[in-house]
Image (cartoon, rainbow, N blue to C red; front, top):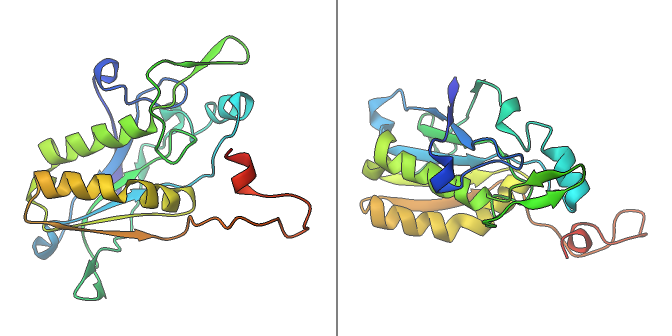
Length: 204
């Protein structure tokens, strides 16, 4: 099992969910000493929100507020070693918390219906989680780091692979990084009924 860690000092780091509650992550250490330096970071999926109303609705769920994050989660290691799937690793599971594949980077909150505020800080959540992992969880001793995720988490993998690889290269110089998006590649074509464009049209 993995246990929830809520990020601290959010006033300085800016690492918050859509509703302003602290961002967070789940962590479970490797149990086999042979894999003590193997790491996986997994992005949770959950689509995007495309306007203030939809993002406000999301902020009332586990996809936009840490108030609804379960206390425990689970993780299956997919880190690759010599072409094999490893059975054990240090696993960081990142619950979504924002509506844009961990790419939001807006300093000021955005006004939403009902005099509410939305915080687009997904990038800050990733940044603060990596800071914590390198400084307190031992990822600075990693020998391999695998970045992965499903659906919008797969898109997160595409978007952030270079950044994570650069951080690993700097802070864990003995490690190499691999990106393994499970899904997250959206084709620019009409839906199955032929009536409208799908994701690309919404993301403009």
